[in-house]
Structures are given as C-alpha cells and as structure tokens.
Length: 278
Image (cartoon, rainbow, N blue to C red; front, side, top):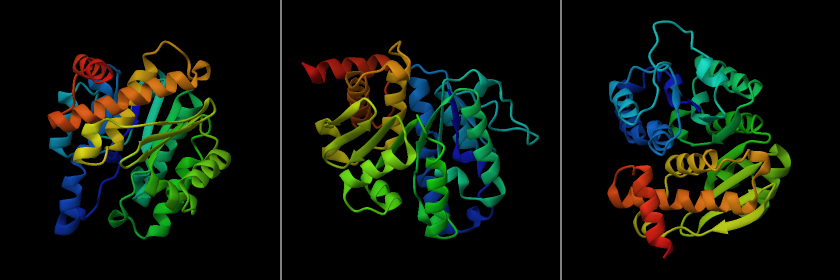
C-alpha cells in the first residue's frame, strides 16, 4: 500500500514561527499515524514524501514502514511500490504548499492509473493554509479523485466541505457528487456512520473511545483498511456486513490505542476485540 505523507510539503519557514512550530509538533502522531497503524497491523506499507524530520523517519521505520521514498537526494520517487499496491492513502494537507501541490496530485493520479483504490482523509488544519477558501478548494479537488474509492472524515469536516449543516444531507450530497464506494464519518460520542454502495449503517464506538478523547481518524482508517485488505475479497465483492466488521475492528484498535497510549499489535487488537465482544 502506498501512503502519500504530509512530508511532501517542505513547510518552508514554518519552523521559525513558534505558534506554528507547536502545531507541527502536535501533528507528529498524525504525520505517521495512518502508515504506522496499517503497517503494525500487517499491511506492507510505503510512505512517500520529501521530509528531513528525523523524528518522523524514526517513528515510521520503527513500525516497519518503508521510507525509501521519504528522503531522497533528487526529486525522483521510485514508483514501483505504487505499481504493486492495492490502496493509496493521502490527505488534503499534502496540498498546502503551491510548490509541491502538483507533485502530490500527480502521485495520486499515478496510483489511480495503476489500479490503486484511493483512500482520502481531509485532515483540515486552517493555520497552515494561505486562507480557508484555498483549504476547501484543494480538499474538494482531492475528493474528486475518490470515485469508487474510500473517504474518511469527521462530521465537522463533512458539513464544512459540503456546505451543509445536516450530517445526513451532507453525506448524501458527498456520495452523489464524488461517488466514493465507502464514506466513513466519525461522529464524536456516536461512532462511525457508514455510507456506501453496499448500504448504510452506524457502528457505535467502544467505551474507551468516548470516555477519553475523540477517535483519531488516521488510526481508525489505518485499522479499517488493514482489515479490509486482509479479508480475501475484492472491494467490489464486499457486503455491508464486511464493511461493518472492518469498522468494528477499527473502533477496537482506536479504543486500545487510547488505553495503551500506543499502537497495538495485530495480536493485541484481536484479543481486545474478542474480549469486548464476549
């Protein structure tokens, strides 16, 4: 699986601005969260980006993520991992900087052309954008690449991007306008609302998720995709039951991550899920 990280962004002079630097450090978990989760739960994962943040490199490598295309002396990426991938994940944060934006979208397009299922999460952080309108425009551009793919976002991101305050109506509008195969909507305190070509369902979260903090979308989506990729079915042949099972597993991983304050192994996640379902 290919993963286009925020590392494609150089961040320019952000490191000299204390307020933004604090936020960037706060994003460290999110920078690596999806790739680390997916890799730790059994997916062969490669991370793409131009980033020399040593701490991020160490975190990714410690969880088994391939970072051969993270630090390169030239601007050329090896596209072989994408050509052999089934899924390609990215977020709109990749498009913050104008100078690297098109390179990022080109990689997404390349993944699509080679049969990768596109997995997208907006991950909206207004402080890093030139203005809120640009954030919305680029996020909607990213959504346009998700036909027959997977989209994950929280309910606040959904109503913002679709200009519709009602969650149900916003979800319906997104499905009609962008045609993803699966839309995962994380709703704080309620769980994951799924809208899909297979059917619709709400999967409640586990107590540990609602009692501590909101579920992190990167961990949830990494766990969801790891289970989806390992179920032995093509995405076209999945049922709503298969999708619900993946969401239940993702909730279990999220809850265990909050309890442990660390990503669990696949064995730990499976044991935790069995315990919770008894």
